Amino acid sequence: MLFPHPLALVTIGVISAYLAKKRGKNPYLWFFLGMLFGIFGLIFLFFSKPAQTSLRAQAAPQNDPNTIDITPKIEPSAKEKFWYYLDPDNAQQGPMSFDGLIRAFREGKISVKTFVWNETLENWQPLSDFM
Image (cartoon, rainbow, N blue to C red; front, top):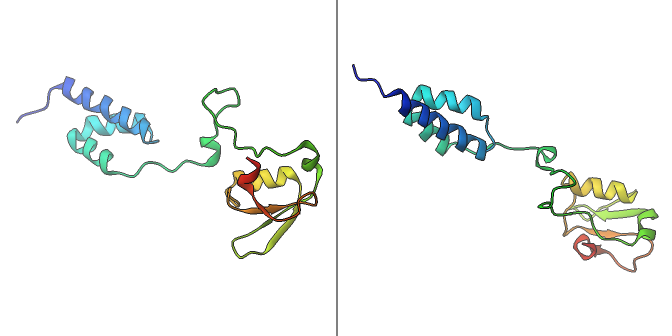
């Protein structure tokens, strides 16, 4: 019977762990799966979908220089106003605080294309106008 060389198994395990980490999967689990199943484990990992991550997992630390600030740029006085937005059915949602509007944006309930309004604005405007 022919067995693979142990160094080859470890190498495939390391490659599996590296690719798993890049795809958002558990690298320790995939290291052992790569060692156990060899090239077949690596092929299975290659064709599997990347792991879904939550918004919290995607959030970067505040002091990271590579992060992009997604907080809309709005005048300080406008932050104290009541905000409204139009949902996909064009139904008015609100009133809510500025923090509530930002929370809805970060949770994905609204996007940069969503129309927002407060009492200081003449017309509904897309959120992207404030970014």
